[in-house]
Length: 427
Picture 1 (tube, rainbow, N blue to C red):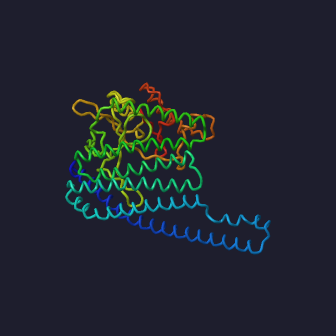
Picture 2: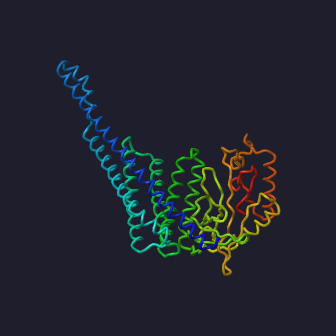
Picture 3: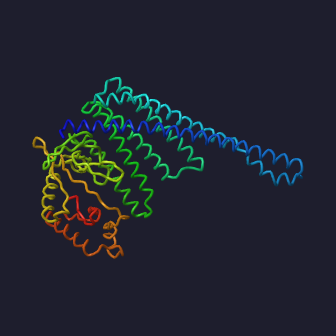
């Protein structure tokens, strides 16, 4: 498959995903609106019923009870909603209705753009007017997301003030939704265009913010105070690195969604499909090999992936040595570890090292029998210590580290492969 065919297939898949999401969202919004209207009607009915019951009880007490009995049973009238509670309930209802109306507007706009998107799918081009309409849709989507956040916040606060964890979770989910909407807009634009490149950059900045909010939320989920403090310090350090990278980091031609690179061994075209958000301090991206589809249960198709790491240090200064050593280490790992080596190679263009590619492996989770080497490292006497075979594989990787003077074969730098063996990375 040629580079042009690869990009055309990518464009086709993105457009079809956008059309399918629009159709599904319209059905979802109709169902959400129906449920909200039904809930509002039930709440109103319950309010009238409680007010009627309170009135009947009060009339009965006034007609038959003594003054002392009246005081004793005055609590029956509290079934009636107070003025403050009624005001807050109406504010919640109004905010929810605003969000629903905005959602209906967005779904209507999406429905109106479906024929246009089919034309774009056929022509692989987007006119200026079509791009303007897509940008308007993005603006309305972002407005819907913020209104939805406001509605969720008011509904949650009806039971009392939100705790730190709940608020951080809502902030993260809202930002993630905004980044998703920005990505959908960027991917509908014409591949290779300046507008698409700029939109992808905006999308990535929103994703970075969402990732930071997610980490802040995860801090609240760590029960151990010492571990929580350690993770908080790590997050602060990474944030400082990010600020420095914004000053020193230079543009990298491979660090943009849609960028392509050809595999040096099999000649396959690898396509950048977005930033990777896990561990480390260097910018990383996921590349897909569209010539190597992988069938998964359910009839879906995914592709073999590679992790691209920029040739920089933690603050963004150019550092080609890391990528070159990664490639050399991978070649040595093939000799020592055989089938358990992880393929990696440096990306060099016009004599300049851009970064390194590393093959992405499927791994097992703890629930699937993976060995928790990180916990074992923290407590070697733990009952969950690995067996002799696993320890021999660890020693095999330690031998590689000794040859490389790396000394970084710690628990978190191992992958539990789906075949039951270990592979070590970050060389």
